[in-house]
Image 1 (cartoon, rainbow, N blue to C red):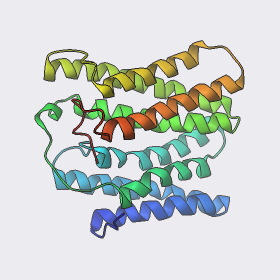
Image 2 (cartoon, rainbow, N blue to C red):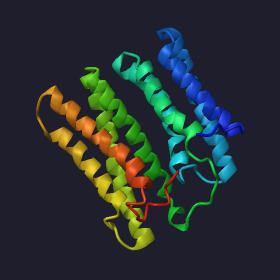
Image 3 (cartoon, helix red, strand yellow):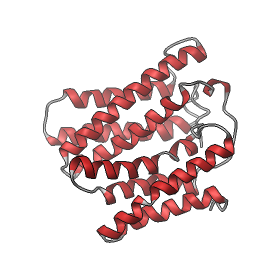
Length: 242
């Protein structure tokens, strides 16, 4: 665990602090502090983009940069669409993703591999990252008995996962000459999609909803971490490491 002390690093450290304060401060002050993550996170993305010369999505560090602002934006949208604030929920998730950004992931810069130099690069990666944030929120909202809000989040998340999966297939055909290669990352992405597809088709109790959303979130976590980074699963997506 290393403290990043350059300009980008301090922006990430601030996000960790703001997220933590959003969880522990009283409701009104926590809301103001947590929503301040949005401009700070946008500044971090802008700084990284300028430094590397391409949309920052090359590896796990850069992809995670998009999660805190997505969660802060989701807080505002939920207030407008559902009528209640989800500050502590989103601030907690924000802390979970901001902490490894600031202290765990390597911020080493690098060029895009040839396979990533495609117009599909941004929508494919961004679609997945936004979907992952929405699916995490859906699970927590369902656990908190906000079924309508959870359903809305999982519906949008499923749309984005489906879109990202389809774009990845087209991109794979352009880069490697095949729409599907049974790469470990592809297999786990498909498994995740199938779990969430089951969510819309299984009619059961709230326990079933919680179980399926939990299984889907577990599949996402395993895909992003163990499958993505472990040397046990080498494949065409191995470049997307720390």
